[in-house]
Length: 317
Image 1 (cartoon, rainbow, N blue to C red):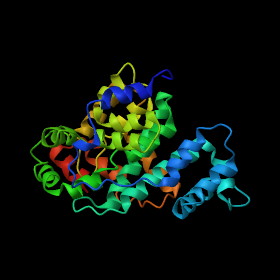
Image 2 (cartoon, rainbow, N blue to C red; image 1 turned 30 degrees about the horizontal axis):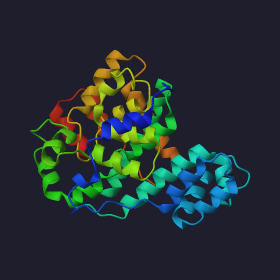
Image 3 (cartoon, one colour; image 1 turned 45 degrees about the vertical axis):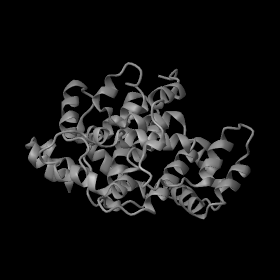
Image 4 (cartoon, rainbow, N blue to C red; image 1 turned 180 degrees about the vertical axis):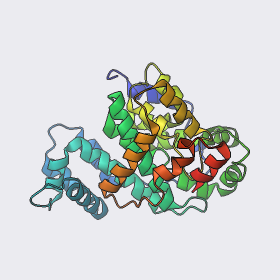
């Protein structure tokens, strides 16, 4: 649907929560200033590519990642993009903005260490979810770019939170084999908030697009998002389905079982084929994230119809 007031939906859902609710011990990541400037300046239709390129060029890391992405994505180019302006022209402003947002967020979080999460494995799973969400979004005829960015960033705060609140999250992990609650259901009674709400509010403070903020905010809704009359054919639903895929923390205890159920209700949704497609596209992307734990391996137990206990072992790999 194209008539959703994302700003109003965001405000309504976040109205009772402020970042002040987070413990002062949590050191929230800082968003790259150049990305914030790019987002704001790109809203002006009169802004030239030269002006936007000048903003990106103030951040060497963003410049390198943009050029690397463009030159690896447009393999048919006779000559490689040598300048940011050339890269922006090839990608277009909208895709460039999504790339800078995801790159900037990753950079802000990757600089932090987590005592509970392996960063390489974490971003590998995030990229798998992002590719999966993009494929599903296309099936739903929803915004594939927003779905990709939303799925990639849905858990971006977890490395920070699991490090600064290590004992509480370690308790969740230790009891995972016997407790079937989702990570968000665990977080709310313990903290009074969940990582989805905190991530969405911080993203809003960073001035990220409202539809992207809503993808972060509602990513834990699972199949309920797909059944939602307002959100069911949007990127939000695609991201929510991607959140059911396995990861280190196994945030959704029976996520794979839910996806297996979905394919019995939605004939076009064939999990095994989607999983294989994710791994193929992952290999072709060249984003510098090694697929050391292919999604096919993570989902193998479910696709073979094994027991929930075996699913747990596979998801944790």
